[in-house]
Image (cartoon, rainbow, N blue to C red; front, side, top):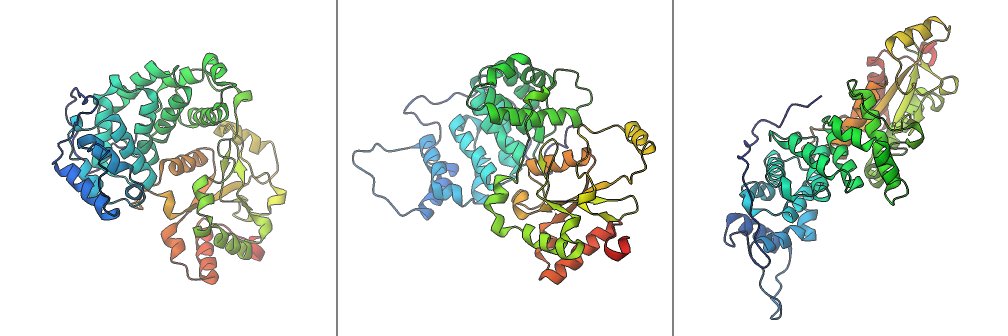
Length: 408
């Protein structure tokens, strides 16, 4: 289940050590150190100089670093060389608030920086006893979002201990941590047994985050069904399940004017006919698909009105499928899902899918849908609708699909 850990070139984790934080008003950063100098230089280059107020005390060390990281322009325009310099700081120079700012910076800008992610993982391990789940959920967020499993040997044991200690204190934070681990395919059984227990579910019902927690629990239950055949603990009751992602994700809706979806839809309409595919169809247990086709055993694209577009969930076993096929004369249709892989579906380097995207594709594949990815590099290279139609035709024919007069 675990992904290959880390990346070539990642820095080896330092031995665990106890960190002592500076007290109120004290600085835990050398004010003339290279880290602060780089951050201060970057902040000054972005903002006009502001004369210090005579009534405002000077800010030094770690407080100055927090001010620099909190600068809106600094967060809006990431600089690779600058955040790499943060990885050179010693663990004793970093506070939970600063590390949360760094984690949010990486996640927001899709920056898959191994050195800095390893620094966050090491900090989490070193400061395990001092961190509560509300802080840990923010520190763990970039690992799941950026699809990065750290090299730090104690990363998972540390999180399991924190979950065991904090699970009943902050339900939403607990489920958020498990969501990040779900994207990494590293779900701990003990924590799953706790969040699926009747006491935990009864506790969250009627609370403000109830709907979002139930949505996340539904996704975790799907992960158990599809990816954890050895799990024998409690599961989410059917009456508590809700659709996971019943509509396109927020990032897709926000960037719709940059998306290739409308162009691909028009290409499919002219190529196949609008009765032969469905767009933005949500399939059980709640994944929204970009485009879905039903294909007969001969490879012919079938009219959607004649087919049930949904595969059964939970998936049937091979023996059940064979028995059902022998007992019916209907042509068994295969479901093909065209997956748009837009530029913002990847980490900033453009090579690694974000955790949520990888999770969706993985689960759709495990449910029996045949996936046809459409990478942004290929879509961006198409010049006009005629080229796009030719591109889509080649993609579909490579799967053995036929349509129109030749499809029978």
